Length: 147
Image (cartoon, rainbow, N blue to C red):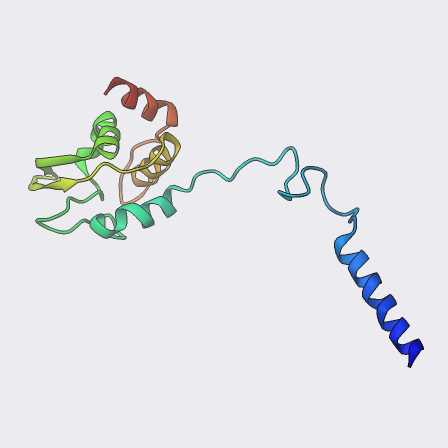
């Protein structure tokens, strides 16, 4: 019985040392963050921001809700990139015309940083039949600083 107990203790000790000990296969860096010194944060994902922040009003296809929320799909309103950036930063209320239809509602300012705004607008400009180019965090910062 004593041999079985000692064998069990030895097995547990080996398991503990193996699972908690040094692993030479891990990359160098901070062992508490499990990252390497060269690791960079993941790029901000505009699509996921859109799905969390915009989709409730502008819908998954960017078509909006007729009479209530303007479309982002093939939207002539997006022709003015600075105006689009400012609207995300500051929000907008009152009348606006998008693709020939009048909307009179409120879009609250979005609590997003410059990188997130750039990412979500780049996503919008790259999808839903839109042809705009990428939006940079520097462009967003410039609009934010100006207003």
